[in-house]
Every structure is written in C-alpha cells, then in structure tokens.
Length: 322
Ligand code: DP6
Image 1 (cartoon, protein in one colour):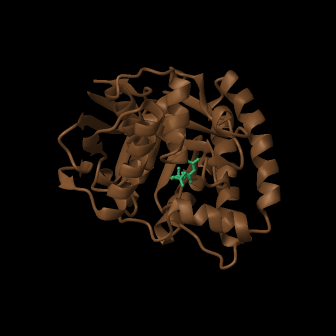
Image 2: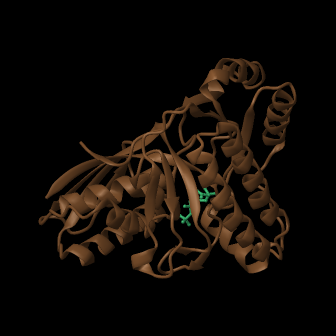
C-alpha cells in the first residue's frame, strides 16, 4: 500500500485562465504546455490502517492546515474512487532552485495523484491519471505527460484530460526562468482566474483568442518552429494578463522587475536574437528560445538579474514511478 511518484512542472504556452465548472474543475478553454526537466516534485504515499488522520509532510515540515486540507480532500477522492479506507502518510519534496521559487501545484498534484493511485494498487491509463490530477489543480492535468501537452477542456469529467502532442521534444525549444520574486503570491491563480471570469469584459474575446492560438501553435509545433511557438506564447500571455487589468477591480501580477525583464527580451529581439517571454500568476518571467541562442540570452539576463536568479530548463518527462 505504498508508492513514490515524481512529476515535473509545466509552463503553459497557451494559457488556462478560468473554469467553467468549479466542482469538476473543467476549464473554460483548452490549453497547451511544455513540461520542464528542471523543476519537479517527488511524493511518497503510504496508506496505513493504524492512522486516525492523514499525516502530511512537505519539504521536511508538517503541512500548514490549509495545505493539509487540500491534500487530504484530494486523498479522499482517491479513497472513494479506489475503495481505500485507510488514512495515509504523505511525504513530498519540491525540487526548485530557491525556496518557493517556482513551487507549483502542477507538479505537486500530478505526483500526488500518481503516488496515491499506485499506492492503492491501481494502475489506470495516464489519461485517467490526468483526469484525477485535474481535481487537485488544473495545471496538474498536463504534468502527467512529458514534453508538449494539450489539455482538452471537455464537457464533463470523462472528456477533460491531457494528451501529449510531442513527448520527446528535441528541436531546441528551451526556457530560462528569471526568479524575480519567490514569495507567495497575493492573488492565488484560483482566485484571480475566477474573478476574471466574473468581471472581465474581455472574457468572450479570450475564448476566441485561445481557440485560434491552439490551432496556430499546433501547426508551429508540427513544423518545429521555435520562433513561431515563442511568438504565439508571448502574445497569448500578454492577452491573458490583459484580462486581469480589465477586471473589476483590476489587478496585475507584474512588478517593476517583470516589466524590466520584458523590456530586455524585447531589446534582444529587436537586435535579432529570437527570444520571447511568458508569465503566469506571479511576477517571474520565463524566456522561450532556441538552445542555439542560450548563451547570448543567459549572459544578457545574468548581467541584469544575476546568474543565481536564472534557471535554464529543458523539456522534461511525464510522471514516473520511483
Ligand atoms: C496562469 O492550475 O494553479 O499557470 O486549477 O485553481 O489549481 P487551479 O489553478 P492553476 O492555474 C494555472 C494558471 C496558469 C496558466 C496555466 O498553467 O495554464
């Protein structure tokens, strides 16, 4: 009754930003991401008949009540699905370059979904695992698979799952994460996206943007065109963040350093270096480029932010049993 799983985080190139069903965790739109090798979560789950409650340890510390409840609620789903009646020991370690730097619910819930399912003695398909991971965190749906991954929005639990578009990505696509601010964000992605769905007048346009971007990025991936992939991702990210500014009340995840990083990437681009940026629910910037340009981009960013604030990431694998 125990298993250990490792899942890597992912960065969306066409973003998920809003749910249409909060209970089933169905997203408003499809999305597409790149799983990264550099950042991952390793989680061990052991069901134990002697326990009176779930025992959850994250990065060597007993989990805070809010986090513990989210993990325990998720384990209850697994218990119901696979007829397990025991509580569990959960031990989870996040491998991120700095404390809480890019700690992500994506790798955390993908690893937890897999470890808990395998510990229950079941080995469903990875598509089924992705549906389960979705119930923990939307972006975790995609972290079950490696490389470039699409999450189909679907219309119910059975149809909302991830699918790999290209699992081993070997055409030079890479990212540098600029770690600008590693503190916990003020507006959670869950709260931020819901506020936008309810109050941003641009939301209908966003649905159309994503539909078009999904078609375009899949063509760019088929052609292994890193520049086109980066261009689509950057435009998509800016449009997602425009939803936040247009909400009521409006808000933004950017800070002055975020804007400074964006300006540097724009400058490099104007000088003929092909690089693009994307941002999620926080101020950190991820740069998208072809590995041939890594050195130029890294050195420019290191001069501005310090090499210790940069993390180079390559495409990473799907969830694995350890
Ligand atoms: C901006 O998956 O963190 O990273 O589903 O509520 O847990 P919940 O939210 P989460 O949102 C991720 C939002 C994003 C874009 C993306 O990953 O597609």
